[in-house]
Image 1 (cartoon, rainbow, N blue to C red):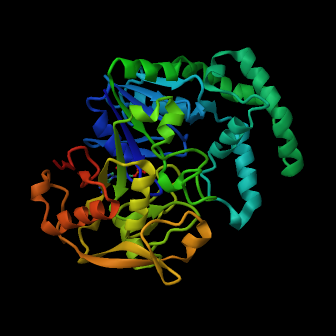
Image 2: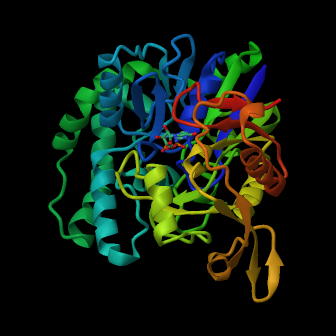
Image 3: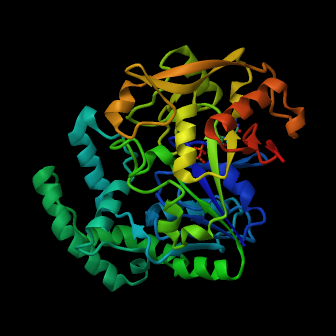
Length: 426
Ligand code: GDP
């Protein structure tokens, strides 16, 4: 039995999709443990690119079951389109399952999120407007009873839950935001056709995970977003409403922490972030633009340009600790191919004091001054290299620097989008 958690070590978009797809080869079960359609995981197979928002990145392996765990929030309309899109490209989704207890993102969640973000104006959180935050808010609120995935299989119950929700939501929509109320019948009519299709995938997710564990199966738990977007451990309030850290795999799927053997932290060779919030190594000038262009740093879900900056060793070290990382996969090393030297942040200075881990208080984090070391670049393309020994010494030294800063060994290095462009160490 091997239970591996794949977790983003920065602010998301580290390339978790590619690494999860690789690990899914030989896995029996791949489980998404949190988040919703605000995620965008890209998997490239040959000439084909697949963009997955909800469905776990193991779906391209037919002999592997893919589960959306109870910690995820599922928009049935998005899920239906994603399934149909995959099927149209010859990918069977027969191996897909969705946990009964996953909460459902409903049209009123999106409406409320849009209005709330508009009202916040420039002080907005910069959400993806997919209704994720309001769906998790309802989950924590508990009453009136929100819609959970199994409810999609029972039209009477679904109608009843929608009506109960709208009694409250319409007060907000009408009186707080001055918008016309939503009709219960219309919301039902919007959701029901999709519910009928996706309801077939509903399953007892906790039982599936527990049975797989008992049977000694290989399980990969896939996180979305990244460590510093975690509701508790992240750079609050500019975070997501769920738990991307490795511990979130326990909450979102029903395994105990002691069942996890491996935590692979995905670490991009530089740093990016979408939306508002602190980013200590951000470069708003030419260097940041170069990283954005070479790394194609534009959101999979939103198309928004990502903020870019140099690798932040303090971020990586702190993330390794928060996740209990056992190894690191460094991704997008090839994006740095052209650079003569590469700045790497090795510590922070704050009021004359050196820090080697991130302060958890955002106002303190805003004041830190990154201390950089210049690492020599390799100035040659890495994309065709397949063995660690083939990598130029400067590229090896850069990877070893990441391991040293994080205090965790690097076991995988990704040198391009495709499965083949991956080097395993040791
Ligand atoms: P995720 O959300 O963490 O799965 O990351 P995204 O899919 O949003 O972003 C990663 C992007 O980088 C995708 O387009 C991947 O195909 C691509 N990618 C992943 N690994 C590499 C790599 O090593 N090199 C390059 N150039 N692109 C990569």
